Every structure is written in C-alpha cells, then in structure tokens.
Image (tube, rainbow, N blue to C red; front, side, top):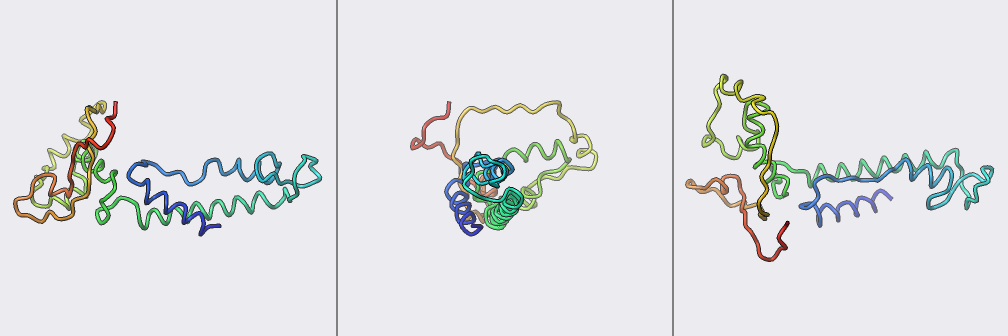
Length: 187
C-alpha cells in the first residue's frame, strides 16, 4: 500500500504543490486504526467477535497496531518523497512558497536574525549590502508586531535565465510577477 500512497502523494505534490502551503499526510490516524480495527465503528468495521459489536471479523488485539504501523510507514514515505523532490530549496525554487520566502524573508530575517536570508545572499551575491555588527544588533527584535498589506494578487513564476550583468531585482531573484486576467480576482 505504501507504493499506492506514494503515487497518490506524488500526484498531489505535482498538481497542487503551488497552491498548498502545508501538507497533511493522514488525517486522524489514531481514529482510523482504533475505530476501524479495534471497535469497528468506522470502515472497514473490523474488531474481535468477543466484543459483540457487530463487526465483520478481525482481531482487536493486533490489527490496530498493524494498521498504525503501516500508517506511520506511508506517512514517512510521502514525507521523504516531498523532501527529496518537492520541498522548496535554492536548487528547486519553482514553488510559490520560494517566492513568498524571498519576498517576506528579505525584511523579516534582518529583523529577527540581523542578516538577510541565506537564499537571498546566495542569489544576489555582492550586490546585496552587508550589515555591520552594530547594525545587525540594532535590527534584531526591532518590531512589536507584523502587519501585511494585501492589495492584489500577483502570479509568480520561476525565471531561470537571468545571468545578465544588468539584471533587475526580479531577474536576480529569478522571478517574474504578473497580474493575469485569466484568473478570478481575489476579494
């Protein structure tokens, strides 16, 4: 079953990866193993006959543990696939979360760590100014709350061909942003 779940997870990561912020592999795994295999009130309705709960057969003393064991393995299989092929990284910056990472962390990292994010320092290189130790210390914690203005929706895309000496801000970050009439306005 792990291969089936892995295939399902891969399909979801490919088709919906740009739209999903947080993935959950299994919803309420304990409820499924306990209710489906210990007391039989969820599908597939299995439990030991001595419980007299109108189950279709099963062994309440072993099956819930076997099911939980396989739930853990399928979860780990999906997570490993995600981390290996789909998780945002400098080498794989096509996901929307990479773009959000760059745009938000450009300002938040200096305020929380005293420096620009590693990804930005790597992409921008010598063009990015450096903070002195005193500036870094002054920046850290210099906010009481975070406010975000959200006026419009932009559609971002990875733009790998930006090796120009005269590259713009977005080209250096390997991004394109556009407002597209093909999509419904977000209100």
